[in-house]
Length: 83
Image (cartoon, rainbow, N blue to C red):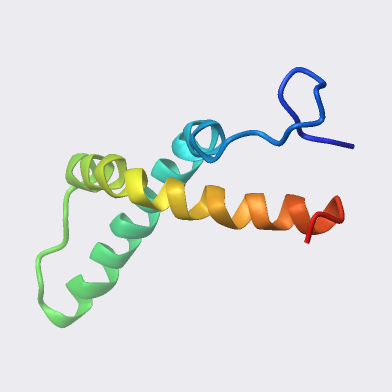
């Protein structure tokens, strides 16, 4: 199966993959930041609130989704024999 734009055989550009993956990366980052905050509370450091974790997740998801899109693009290229 080919993930291409409109059946033309061309692969999706990275920005489209990054935009598609942004929501998932933001959610994963928000959850991980909140859990990290819970862990550091055990050593006496104040952890972030859930709202702060969500906002930081949204912010850090911008570069995170780009890195994830590059990784997914490489996997797709490898699966389709382009590499």
